[in-house]
Length: 482
Image (cartoon, rainbow, N blue to C red):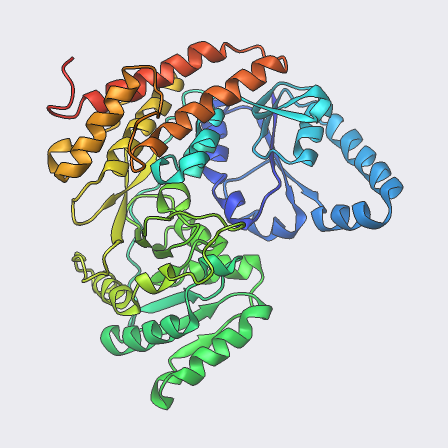
C-alpha cells in the first residue's frame, strides 16, 4: 500500500502533522509513506517521524510563476502531477484546502481523506469530523479541538499514545530559549516584555538565555541585549539568523525550556520533548494550537474579544498583549527550571494559566486554578460531540457545573432550553447565543456539500452532533432532568 500526506502549510502546521504521520505508521505498518511539503522545510525531515520519501514542492517558485508566467506555471504543475501519479498512491491525506492542494488531490485519482476535492478540485468537501472543526471557527472561544488531533483522527481508530511529559534536562545552569518574533503583530509580545523576562530569569533562576529567530528578527535580539544591564548581557546569546531548521532542532533539544508565542519554534520544541511556556493572546488559542503533548504551560489573555482574527479585527489599539505580565512568566519559568510545582501567579483579570493534559481524544488544556466558566463547559461539550462523530464512545471528561458562577449556570440552562426547542438562538442573551453558531454553521456546511453532490448524510451527522451536545451539557448537575 502507498500513502501520500499533503501538508503544504507553514512550519508549525507541518510539526503539528507529526502525530498523524505516527498514526499512519501505526495503522498501516507495512505501507510506504510519503510526504509532500514545502521544500523550504526539508531540514526537518530527520527531526520528525520517518517517512519513506519526502517530496519537495517549491511553493515560493510556483507563487512567483503565477504572477508573471501562467504558461510556465501550467507546465510545471503538469510535471508535478505526472510525477505524483507515477507513485500510484492508494490513499491520500489532504490536510489543506487551498486551490493547489485540492487540485493535486483531485488529479491523483486516489481515495482522499481530510479535505476532499469536489467539482474537479474547485470545491472542497469536508468529512463530518473536519466540518465540525471548521464550524467551530465561527465561535472560536468554544473550540476545544487541537489541530494535531484534528489531523490525527483522520486516520480511523487513532489511538496512538500521546507525547509524554517533557523530560528534565540536567545542566550546570538552566538554559532558556526565547523566540521573540511571530508571523503576525497581533501574536507578538512586546520586546520590552521579553527584555524584562530575560532580566528576571537570569537574576532569579541563574539562567543563560538563547535568542532564536530569523535574520530579519536579529535587530530585536540586539535591542533586547542593549536593554539589559551590562553585567547581564554576556548571559544572552543572540542566535537569530544563525540557525537553519536542522540546527534549530538541535538547539531546541539542548535547552531547559522555551518561551514563545504561537510559533513554529514553539511547536517544534514541544515535539522534540522540550518543556515549553506559551504566551498567547490575540488570535492565538492554546486549545487550538497550544504546545502538543502533556505537561506544557500557556499563559493566555482572554478579554471578551478573544480569540480575534488576524485580519479584519476592529481593535485599533490591541491591549491584550499587556495582559500577560513578564513577571508572571518569569515566576513560572523559575519554578519550572527548579523542578518545583508551579503555583498560580498573580495575574490580571481575564488572564489564565493553563497546563496541557491528555484524554482519550488527545491533548487539551486545563486552568491551573481549577475554575471553569460557561465557555469551558460548552467547549467541552462540543469536544464530546466531536467524539461522537468519530463513532467512538470515548470518556472525555466534562467539568462539573457546580463550580460555575451562578450567572454562568443560568446561561447554561438557557442554552440547554434552546437545544431542546429547535436550537434557535432567538431570545437568547448575547453571552449565550454565540454558543449555537458552530452548530448552525455545521448544518450549513453539510447542506451545502449535499447540494454540490457530496454523498454523505448531512442531516444524520447534524442530528448526531446536536444530540451529543445536548447530552453532554445535560450531564452537568441540576441543569436538566434526564
